[in-house]
Structures are given as C-alpha cells and as structure tokens.
Amino acid sequence: MSMEDNLHQTSCQCGFPIQPNSTSICVKCMQSKTDITLGLPNKIKLVRCSQCNFYLHLPKIWVKLQPQSILIQSFCLTKLKANINSNQVRLLRAKSVSSESNSKSIKTRVYVEKEIINGETLQQSYVVEYVLDNRICDPCSRVQANPSQWVYAVQLGKHGSHARSFLYLEHIILKNGVTANAVRIQKMKQGTEFAFAKEVCARKLVDFIKRQVSVWICESKRLVSHDNKSSYYCLQYTFFVQVCSICCEDLIFLPPIVASSFGNIGPIMICTEISNIITLFDPLTLRHCFLDGDTYWREPFKSILTSKDLVEYVVLNVHEVYFEFTINSKKFGLANAEVARVKDLGKNGMRFNIKTHLGHLLKTGDHALGYDLWEANCSDSEIGLKEHIGDGVILIKKRSEEKLYQKRRAVHQSCLKDLEEITNEVHDMSLGGEEPTLEEKLGDLNLSGEKYKEKKKARRMA
Image (cartoon, rainbow, N blue to C red; front, side):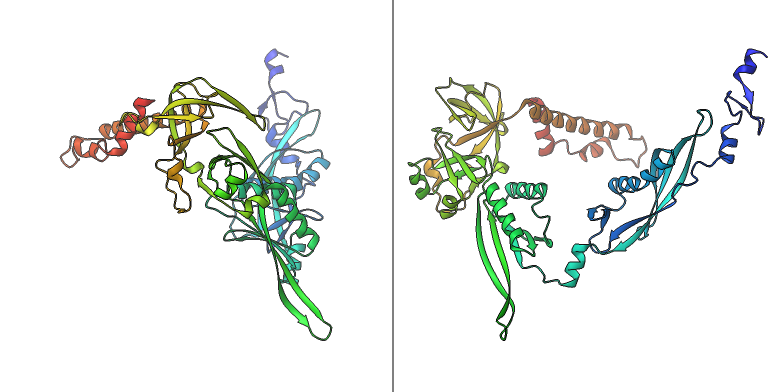
C-alpha cells in the first residue's frame, strides 16, 4: 500500500474519499445513522407571572427578565444545561429563533457535540422550545386578594431640581435588600413609595435611610374603616421621608442664623461630603463645619449653584501656597492665582485674580472647573450674593488631562466630519446643467455660520 493510500481512504457507506478514521465513515453518513440529540429535551416549561412578568428561577425566587434579551436566553440555557450534562453531550453555542411577539413560546437553536466511537466527535443542532406557563406569583396574588392590604407606607420624596443624592440612595436601598418584604413599590411624581404589611419592615427602611443621608420625616395616619360595636379601627400609616437636596461640589449660601451659630463662617460654602452629616467648607478661609440632620432641617437651605453650572477656566499663573489644611484626609492649599474663562480666550482679555484652595494642585496651563459668581442667577431675594462675590470666581476641582484629551479629540473628529462632507459634496458633482453649482452645494454646509466658526476656533486652540 502506497503512502497516498494511507493518507486517503473511501467511506464504506458512500465511497466518498475521506481522511482516515477508525469508523471509515464520512461525516454525512455518520450523521444520517447517529442522532446524538436523542434523549435531550425538546420542550421545557418556563413559569412566568402574568401580572408582573417575573420568571420562576428557584422554588421561591422570581427574577425579572425582558423578552427577547440576552438575559432571558442565558436563563433558558441554564434550564437546559442540567439535562445536557447528564447525557454526556457538550453544549457549543445557541442562537434564538425569531417568533411572533405575542407567542407563548421561546425557540432556540442549540448546537451540541458528543464523542461517539474511538474519540471521534459529532456535532448536530436542534430546536428547543420553551413553553411559557402563566401563573401568578405570591406578591401579586396577595395584592389581587386584597388591594388595600398595605398598612404602612414609606414615601421617599426628593427635594430640589437635581436628584443625584436621591438616585444614589435608591441604589443603596436596592443593593442592601431593605425592601425585600415590600408589598408594592410604586413611582410617584416626586419620589418613590414603598408599601409594607408590617410596621417592623417600614421602621427598618426609615432607620436605614436616616443612617445614609440627612432626611426630614413626617408621620401620619388615615382611617380606613371602623366598627362601632367592637371598637375596631382599621388605620393606614404613612412615613413621608424628604431627602436633603444638597450634593457634593454644590455652592451654598449659609443663612445668617446658621453662619452665626458656627462662629460667622462663610457665608459662601462648598459641600465636600454628604451623608447623615453634611460637611461644608469655606474655600476662602479653609474653615469647615459639620451639620447634622436636626440642625439642617431647623433652618433648611438649598444650593445656589450646582455641578450643571460649572464653567471651565484656564490657569494663567499660580503663586506659592501660603496656608495648608487637611479635612477628612483631604489636603487643601490656599494660594493666589490668575485665571480666565476658556470661552473668553481670543475674544477679550478678561482675567480674574482669585484666591483658591487648590493651590497645591494647580499649575500654569492647567484647566479647572469653577463657579462664575458674576453671572450667577440667584432667584432667592433673601440671599445677598452681590455683597459676598469678592473675586467673582470659586474653583471647585482640577480637570484631568484624560478628559481634556477626550474633549479635544471630539472637537477634532467633528472638524474631520465637516471636511469629509465637503469632500463628498465636491466629488458627487456632475457637469450637467441640472446639477446645482459648487457655491450652492457648499452653502448647504454652512461654512460661514457661527457654529462652524466656533468649531474652527476650538480646533485652533487644541
């Protein structure tokens, strides 16, 4: 027998030349005679709640899954893996099969592999149908049996235009599972409502919120029904929890009563940390104070400028730091600096000689974000901001080099996009009389508009 006969042989079933193997059968003949999907389930039942669209994962655990998503596909495969492993079949991959939106089944094409004879492997695919069995979960059944079964409600309300601290609080509540025994969780116009059947669960949520942020709590009760003969009263209790509106890096104007209670501090302060204790910091004198919830809600105040009002400045000159201080492991250095607004560069020579608490971080040429007190629009008539403007600029934080690079890259990409549009318009022109002229086509690109001029100036600055 020659070497070529050793490298190639014919199938004993169809006579087709194949690579040498122990079975002497080609793949097609092997697939026609062997079915590795025998014993694998073709239909699997998925229990779904028809009210809240939750799926039953374990005997008493319900998970929420969006239809036609990656999570529901992985959830279906976990139901199939137990049966596949028992038959010594290895799962390779799976892909969803399109079906109607109102269908009560989910179809998935599964690719499996199995070792058959003398180490030879065979791959096949088949369709698995997951049939949806609609039921009602325990929370929904309790609500349907008695919609007014809740006795204690905790209404978490936000106070202020921005809700960074409120969203963070919601994340902490869900992460720690404090609302696991809630009968109903409902979104309100200005917050969220948690309904409980027991007072212990409601009190637990209220105490947890009090440990996280500074809140104001108001308790009330409402009569639902009563029996005069037996003197039985059915009451519903509500805990209204209002969250402090102050966030980190907000600019605050302290009321005179609060400022005098802390030794005439401020009154222009910066919030450096927010929890059940509010930390305020004076950027001009490096003095600080701590406010608990009772002190804050006795004389509540709000932020006059938030992170949305931050303006970008460029540092032109920084003098030596003449005073340093550390608050909560954060170091601050007081120094004089000369800054200018980035948007004013090339337009006017307006500069600001200011006193900043970031003197140990800033260098000449750095970019920083701060509040412009000259252009601050304060609608509260009780706040005399004009009397305490001073230098007119309060820097909050230094802008990182990575963010500056991303901003300049975005401006550069927009300029390249405009140039690409011009090039495409020029290449697509023809010499026919019906085609518009070059000036007309370039005029549609708005090369002389204000928006294009701003992009051009930004590109020169970069």
